[in-house]
Amino acid sequence: MNFVDEWRRHDFASVSRRISSKAPADVRRALGRARGSVDLEDFAALLSPAAAPFLEDMAQASHQNTVERFGRTMRLYAPLYLSNACANVCTYCGFSAHNKIRRKVLGDAEILADARVLRSHGFDSVLLVTGETGRVGLEYLSNSLRLLRPHFSGLWIEVQPLPEGDYAALAGEGLSAVMVYQETYDPGAYARNHLSGPKADIAWRLETPDRLGRAGIKKVGLGALFGLSDWRADAWYTGLHLRHVETVHWRMKTSVSFPRLRPHEGAELAVTPFNERDLVQATCAFRLLSPEAELSLSTRESEAFRNRAFRLGFTAMSAGSRTNPGGYASAPESLEQFEIDDARSPAEVAAFLRSQGYEPVWKDWDRAYDGSAQAPRALVS
Image (cartoon, rainbow, N blue to C red; front, side):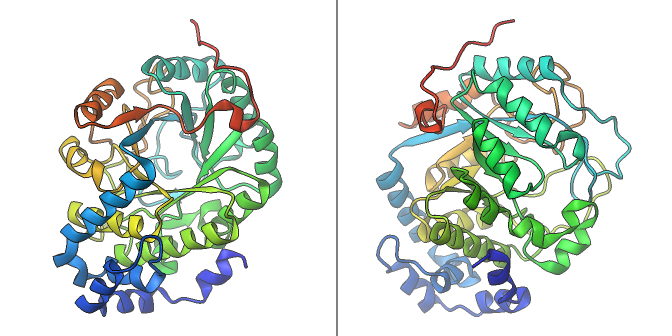
């Protein structure tokens, strides 16, 4: 079954009401489930207002499940923004086509300059990010992967949804993971916030993880942009999507991110409340739903919050992020997609983790897993 068919079987408002109707007994039952046996109704209870008094119990169970599966490790990553050019008009993004900003697409030398900075920090995997535009299509992405493959063990992208054949071609160039966040599963909120451009097609975006699975991509990242609609229902739909991928495309690894709306270029929009306590509840609920999924903590969050929350179920953290093309070396003053909050360097984040008894990990997997036996080559000036 394609996920879009599964999505259409549920009504967003009805899901929201069902979550709100959960009682403390439903939460206790979910917490009593054996590890790995939480179902989507239990997940709804764990996301519900009724779960608020049980947050400490959820946090302890989430921490225990994470340590048992992942140990005391934390994978560190950083994005490399290739472009801020975009054909979409989205209310919440600084790259939106209606913003009158200078657009930039990195050339080969600029890509390698930013990559050199990331390698100097210790990163052995890199996430390539662009806006949605034909200027950064298959040919441009293939070239970027070929440039970087000799220097990193893992290559990931967060770009516009692509056809299945394009993903298969990029896998041949060394692509191992694709992050494709739905933003919101609420069709009304989706239409209100995606006013024009390719991204306005909600079904095409919903189907992307299925295309990735069929194309042989090794990992998919899911998530909603919390603040666009009812966060509890958006989280439940993300869990539905996660369970679909884990069942239908079981060969793929999965990752879930929890981005919250941050300040950006352009007009401000009304934000549905989603505070730090809500983020903790959502994270713990996801860990209890899926013992295997990677859960990612962004530099959108503050240093103080990340220092407290990292051990609650997260297995990956961004560090030293720049959200503008060329932000590390070639064009540090270009427009950011959004403001980060935790501005510590990768070395400072790694030192903090070690002080807490955690081991920072700088890559996702070894190059041999992606079909390359060669060690990463140094990037020299």
